[in-house]
Amino acid sequence: MAYVVTQPCDGCKYTDCVTVCPCDCFREGDRMLYIEPEDCIDCDQCVAECPVEAIFHEDQVPEPWRHYIRLNAEMAKTCPPIFERKPPLSGG
Image (cartoon, rainbow, N blue to C red; front, side):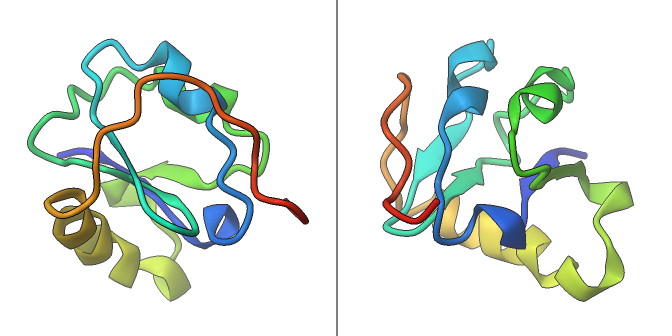
């Protein structure tokens, strides 16, 4: 099981969550962040840091956003790791 970044992150890409992740499982896409499910240790620390409430445990992802579970796994394989906080996208 792992945490999943969902729709509210798309287009804003806040990176507050990255700084508290003890296992460096976040990956940076063009418009949002993703979590590498193989690396996530279910520590829950990122959830409280997300200002747009985009991160859910995969068992609790709202039904309309369930496709983000697969999307995180797929995109995490192609996107580079992110380790430090960056400014959000404009409009985010």
